[in-house]
Image 1 (cartoon, helix red, strand yellow):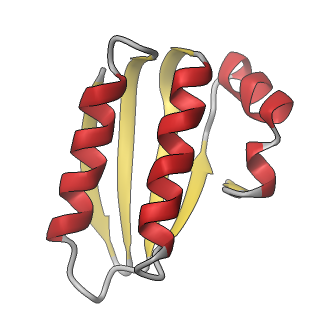
Image 2: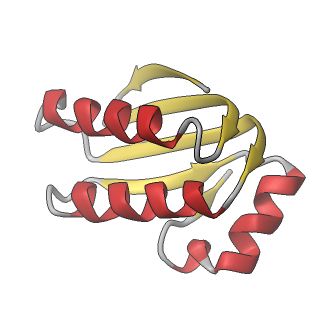
Length: 104
């Protein structure tokens, strides 16, 4: 798993690449937690770009929900963008779009 960050206006874009599973979960958790520690007060959105995520399991859902809870405490909204068809199906089945909206 690799994560690249892009600052744009009031948003941070996190472009994830690879597989989000038990093997990469700790790295993603630590990376997103470190990002939160270093955010300025001008950032109000975190957009997670899943266009290059080839696989994800329930561990990934848990990581996202945990980060959602942390970011929400600081009034930073989380959004999902460009999930692959496989990842989109996982998100739909889990109901995560009810919590973390999908944007285009």
